[in-house]
Image 1 (spheres, rainbow, N blue to C red):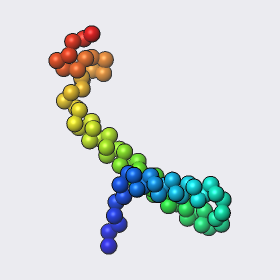
Image 2: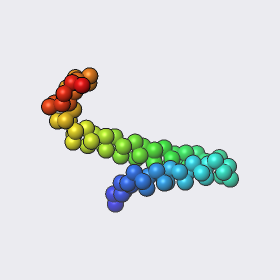
Image 3: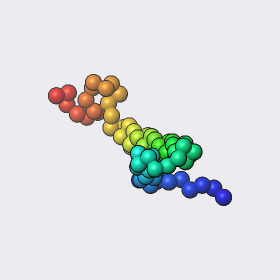
Length: 79
């Protein structure tokens, strides 16, 4: 069975829960390590979703962006 890929919001909420549990300090060492590992997975999922969103936005706006970062967008006056 394949693992469902969480949405950014779900991964972030799960990461927040892990951080909260660790900050409370009511867990033993073994559980804390397991929670840390879980948090790392949620963090990686968040980063993957953000990177995918950034790539998609860049694709959508690539034709609108000037080739030279200091130049105006195509069809726009310089000032």
